[in-house]
Length: 435
Image 1 (cartoon, rainbow, N blue to C red):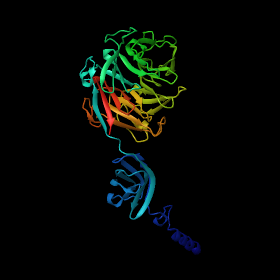
Image 2 (image 1 turned 180 degrees about the horizontal axis):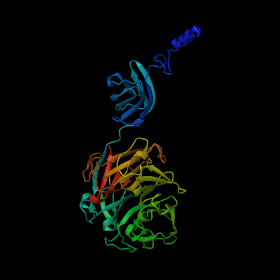
Image 3 (image 1 turned 135 degrees about the vertical axis):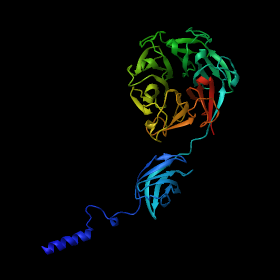
Image 4 (image 1 turned 180 degrees about the vertical axis):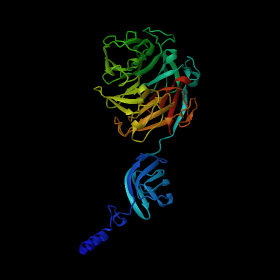
């Protein structure tokens, strides 16, 4: 019996009487990095490093990103917070404590977003006047399209007209006589025209909201009606009916798509005027007051689902997916690479630039924002960024982060990458360039 006891004692001594606890001699001394969040960003981004075997003292942790030392601002045994240094490049995150180094995931460095500068391109006080730059007047410019010559085509909503601004800032009136109506011909009449686009033939397509019609303006300025019988409804066929058509888009085949707000649908109008429903069932779950729409390079229709507080993508087959927004009204750009963590407000118009980025006018947050993609048409790992606006109402020009707007309703991008904003309640067209 004594031999058994002695034998057990010897075993216990050799094993350290662990009681399932691993002694320090079995544990590697270097820190262990489990995760970093976010895993991408620019200089001054705060990165949280989770793991174990860190030091609780800020000064005892040496953190490097791609071999460059980062500033540690918080430290516990299992969590560090560091500030990304400038121009660090992409590479692994390392933590060194007491001479022992742990290697973690790669941090992807993004150069800090360019400095956007906001200025007033055209307009002054509310009114209807042609002229150059700030000598011209608009009254709630609502939407902007840009033609092949970088002319801006503007839906001047409360003036019931369609206006043109040359790259030099010369403002003229293309269609509409300033009086509410629905007359075809030249100059024609409109009733709160909300949106305008330019199709492949150079024709202007107008969402004539309060007339519940889709109109066309030829390059010569002749107005006609494409679809809609002028009554409020959801009839299909020819001419069909709409209930506050807000925004329009055109595909490569020449079909027109309509954000039919109060019907909670996206409608399709063929070249021969046949109206049908492309997406939405009339309820508010799939689409709730759809607004801005535009086609991306892959033929997907990008839609502002305004009252569901999301940006959505509709495939050519009609499948709907969320690409940005939490579904709750608010303001935050969210986590980098996770666009569904961003919060948006009452967004109106949007556009897609040559690189596939989505720019949108977040009216209730009084900001111009962008969904920055790493690959055109791929949105699941995109970044949501704010490029201009403080969140306060005003009309201050200057650096994007200090500029102000008043109900920005639409954005457009010209061939040079210059951004234009329909700053509706300031009665201005604003210009944003980056340096």
